[in-house]
Length: 555
Image 1 (tube, helix red, strand yellow):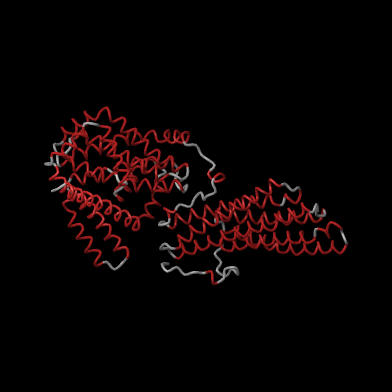
Image 2 (cartoon, helix red, strand yellow):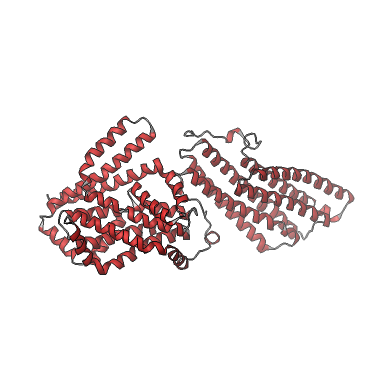
């Protein structure tokens, strides 16, 4: 076989391997991804269970990289903490060794029967879940078929003097072996693929055990760099998780380097099968590293927090804190993240409301600029959250999940309206009052302060209800809203009465006074709408039938 045909076969084999892993991972995610995330959130609270779960998830997805991406996503969203993720990382490394053992057992010879079974199941499946299970079987088959093609390709190559000379030259340089394996793993985004090729080379007697071990170390480091790359642009916690994975793997490789020769002798004495020698070395190395690192996960967490300190991600870089698109295929978790983002928006709007009224007492341009900046933040976060929820609504949702997503869309919209009222109406009135060198009468000031305090009380109740999902607070909110409607009427009548008396300050500031009172009423109406959404009352007057969509996939 020529180098040209060998190269094409190797490329095709790697392609089938990577495609099989992708099909396998994607369909396993659809079948059980949501449950796995939910279990991970609960079980990761305890170290031992976290490690066992890391092993299970990696076995399930046949990819430690997939497990790392999952952990980076969950920590980026603030669902699990760094110290909870570290044992899962160690477990993921252990789980990744099983694929190597399967290759050593020559399971690749079963690739075609597995593909036949998968195709048979796919052909006769009538349900979506049945088809997904068929694709899982096909994914396994394609993965092993890719390895088989590479194995068959390597057979003739071992008699090629130039190829043997190339491998021999590389084998003489341990750090070159590590670099090539790490680079290949990084490029194909799979340590399993790299380790599979290393085992196949050993099984064909094309490399000895010692350079194979160096390549194993490189493959383990390469997969850690992938996790670091996936965490760029994420939160500090996600970056710490990815760095921890890199730290574990690089530390393990450095500790292993002085003993490679002795490990090779030991593994050779256990079994004469080259494939098992490589697979066993990989398994024992990862297992020993996990056992050594497990007691020090808390200390590692503290070191990483010092090395990568928290940064003010929100103020210096206007972007959402909790919206993670990798969680969209787990609607329940994604809804929780969108709800947390809505809470961030509600807190910003509450800060705007608290400070806006102070501008009528003593106007300050810096404070006014801060309010305008916060309103810009609110707008950007509302746009991002609405986009996230729109993407979520395209997923396969249950009816409750769909209704919750639609409710959040409308809640975010209401908060955006409140921000607009505060910046466009109330803030501009304060600026106008200042420019014209006018002031409210003492009675007028007291009335506006009373209205402001009542609306702020309503906002605190509604925001707390959003955060705690407490139905009793909704009842309080409705009562406070009724009080505000009544208060607005009484304050307007009181202002008219002062106008009849001909008070100078009242006459000069009449339109501004009434506009401010009316703006606070409008804010209370938007807050009442949010309370209505939270109470899930379908009869709410604001919820027009035109806004109610029926999801095509609602079940």
